[in-house]
Length: 52
Image 1 (cartoon, rainbow, N blue to C red):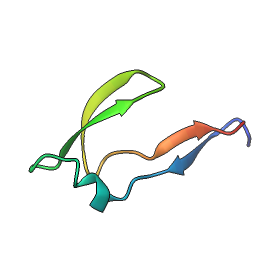
Image 2: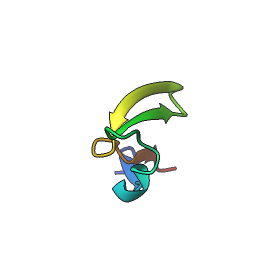
Image 3: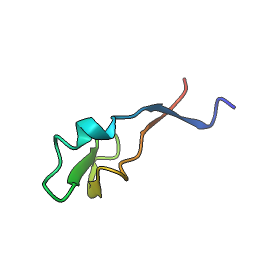
Image 4: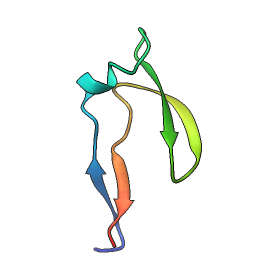
């Protein structure tokens, strides 16, 4: 079970809405993967990390 990723943190939608544009769009930056994509307030996934 230690080899499976675990959902650690999430940001509530009411906080994400403060950073979104009027249509609810966000730019999501994945730090570890060094990638960016456009998402919405409702489809931003939780932070997934490996248990050490």
